[in-house]
Length: 520
Image (cartoon, rainbow, N blue to C red; front, side, top):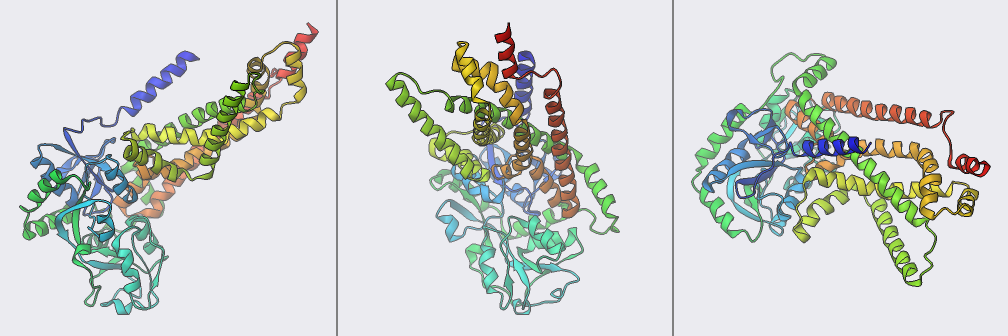
């Protein structure tokens, strides 16, 4: 068993090490979503000047990528894209996980309080994207959107424009453009605010979308319309180098490069006859099965190792918290203090969402202590300690469920507390908490989806990338839902089989073991 466990650990370490491992001095790490064409997108090969995405076998390309390549070349480094969710970009920069941001980000006054910005490398004014066959398809002015349900991307200056549309009905801002496109195609919203390059991309990718270039549009400050590179505030040396590179790119060069990116961006099914829903799903799965497989593997790895580690943490804490009070007064005080600390740990991790814990642990530790964690190992750590907090209470309840007479019988036979737990109580506890442990495993499989905020390329993140490439959101997320269901259903069946094995006729409880010894 020990050999098998050791082999499992070695395989795990080998799996984690398959990601790119590079020296900071050799590479320029640039953060972006890689899901905002034509500014940035994800592709499966290095064609058209694409560059590697850290920790994956995929590549990133787009206007932001090409600009970042020029900066990296000037600095004598190779460009490495760090795929990060929009909300995680600034924390990733300030915590030192990335060297700069090139993600179509505008240098707004609010962002300037947190990070520094380079000179502008593109200027893009806002437009609206609507349904091509909708009631607002012929609109020319923002005054024609009376009663329209309009949204924008969360954390972007476009949100401020929602209240600038007369008589419109502003909707809750959404996490990214993929969510907004899905909402528009399903009729949940009537329009979303975007920029011209993204709107052209949406129009080309799906004939159901239409860009509205407003004749009477928004009044936008120049700093909001501009796109700039984000840097840490005190990194003046890099800022000067970036600005020197950007100064060599004329407005004509910017327009030409953007037009080139629009032309080569991945667009599927733009002019083809729409196949059936299941044919679309099959095509998506056939073309992107490697992404789904890798995401599924990461999800299983994190949830399995996290659940097992959390169970071990729960068992240790459960045994400790049910231990008798130490006879020595000094040890008794230390025991009580440690119990308080354990209680604080349990309450904190049960009382806060995993998504918040992920941000604090991954980005917070780097910013506060300079501790740089591998994101996959950080994800496993987060799931493990979160699961441990829940399992400790489950284990404690399982221990208290064991008949008190068994403890008394063990004491009468001269068993120590450790022996009683190890040989009599825990075998029964493990059997009794199997259903709760399986439930935690299933929850962890699903909850790994929140780890995309620290750029873990698990199943949800991988699927969302595919959705942004294909513009077939409902079909893609249906595939993701099926994969999640297969995972959880399989885990549930396996654990039920294990339960039945425990419930076999030859299963002997700790109580029976004691009785047997007494008879002998």
